[in-house]
Figure 1 (tube, rainbow, N blue to C red):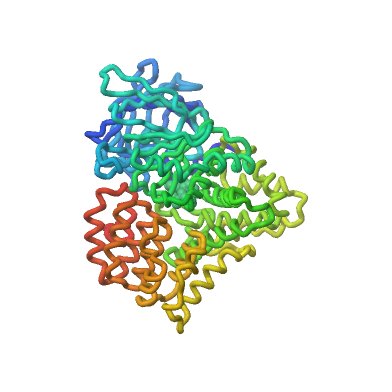
Figure 2 (spheres, protein in one colour):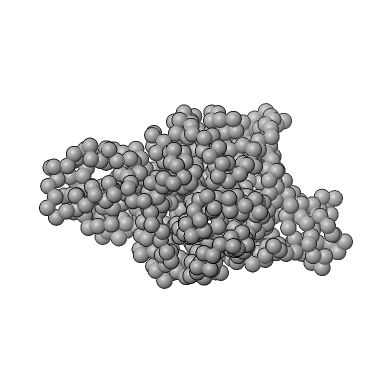
Length: 613
Ligand code: BES
Ligand code: ZN
């Protein structure tokens, strides 16, 4: 399994050199919104004839490059390529062979795409600024000069100096904190002894508090939300234990959580040793804590076994969703052969896939293939639910075909063990499966190319247990019936549904034409407006927009302003833009708020609003 140079989103040449370790010495400067310092790279030379090392950078100011013995190296930074960054070429001397230690002195740009710098007013405490990173898929290069391709894995260590109002956290083991000389700054040190791809380096700095969640888990957040956060995620250790039963031993030592400020663009991010989560999952009833199951699962699928490039992203996300649902259903006490909960969330995921494929993506869109072609594209633009839901449907199909969980789960553990600490592509998975199940007659039935390389919905959709979804469909049908009498509905019909079912009930309504009268009646009877559950609030606001309830434009914009999770913010903006009456207010709102968004969020919404030229 030779490292492939074939990553259309990176300049690096991993068949020539591979980074084995990076030591970072960083100074965090909030006034200039930059990180400055050095990256010391231990690089293994694989090919003696090559005299140049190629790295990925984006908007970095490179001050000096030398070998550890002080010998200065010449380098060249090519001009920026849109979405990809620049190629940094370093000349190596003739005599170098084996391992090289290269020291790069540099500064990041205030416009680095991988960081967000928050003013105190954008935090819960409103007193201290805050900074966090989001490097997946290809933003590590805006902070660390590196081979920014998941084909390369390295260990890392770091020493980070910051003003003593802050706690610094990274995706690594915390190895110490000491006061630095001037008494106003602290140095925090970290070590990540398991090799990881560059996109899993992560940092966050803020005025943070912590609570212990379990023997290997601490939760971090601003003090205003720390207790709420600790309560919401109290089951983390239980989740970890079930995950280990399914996947094998947890190798990362600690599993900490950081609850970020609301502008964090994702639901969660699986940074090793320190999952990042959005505060929008603090529902107050643990109903959205599943995001942690998802990120825990990435400790195996994604972080231990990693897609070789983002064309095979389904190996990260499809596997994670597939296994996440097994873990969640065990958490709810579901037996191996009782799949009500597992199938309910699978059906919901499939509905989202259907909406995306028949909606904004289109059934012929090559980005709806499981393996995508990223040439000329940014992986951020290729992001969708397809690798998640089409990927997990494929695995569910394979599980059913090859003998059910009893047969397939041991294979999963074999897969994880075989490819641990490696980066793989879909063929590696396919070959291992073909070998493992070689005596299974059903193997010949698998239409690999149709599953992997054709657009649209999954080739085969397994039969799922519909018990839990039926209650949602029935209630939606009653509301949608042409002769529905809205005065006959009771709050209890809605309250007896689980919050996942309530969310699905709203999704079912969203698929249909809804009248303003009906949506107003819904509000009167069910008081959905006051829900603390962001998933419910999101669907409710979309329903109001769909029914053209003008008073709700403000609420929808407020929802888009008070948190930055792209999954919520983008559809709200798209819906409002499509409504003539709301368009100009929506554009004004975006222009007033874009400076509070992370680069990627504003950049993506700009496209959604057709403002990109
Ligand atoms: N790794 C992803 C987030 C991500 C994907 C960041 C691609 C950047 C590029 C993370 O594990 C994820 O899938 N998050 C989901 C959580 C959900 C599926 C429970 C999210 O953010 O919505
Ligand atoms: Zn994920």
